[in-house]
Image 1 (cartoon, rainbow, N blue to C red):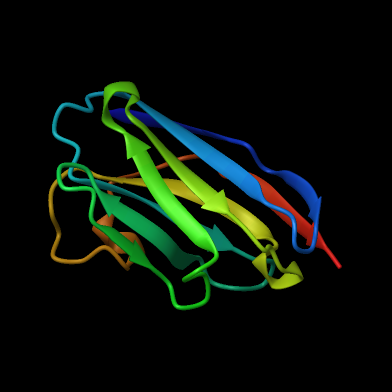
Image 2 (cartoon, helix red, strand yellow):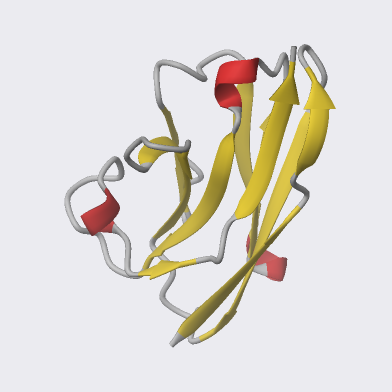
Length: 125
């Protein structure tokens, strides 16, 4: 089992930055990738960003490219999401996700084996 704990959410004004963190614990010896998804009220959970654990290759949704940056600290088993130039449409619950073995993709919910509890990000206009 792997446990994921997110932190860093909150209420910010449009244009402000915010950084989310997600710490993984438990059976993390075979981490393949970690990612972030988000879910706004009344909408499906959608892919935001992912990072491969060994090579650090990154993947982003088009809606956040150039504004968000994902990074990881392998020693701490922690992944970060730096969010800049936030917009009201970024308002959502953000979920950390853990991929233990490569599933063939990084972009779908089914590619991930474990999920965090979510952290609320609210961007006011």
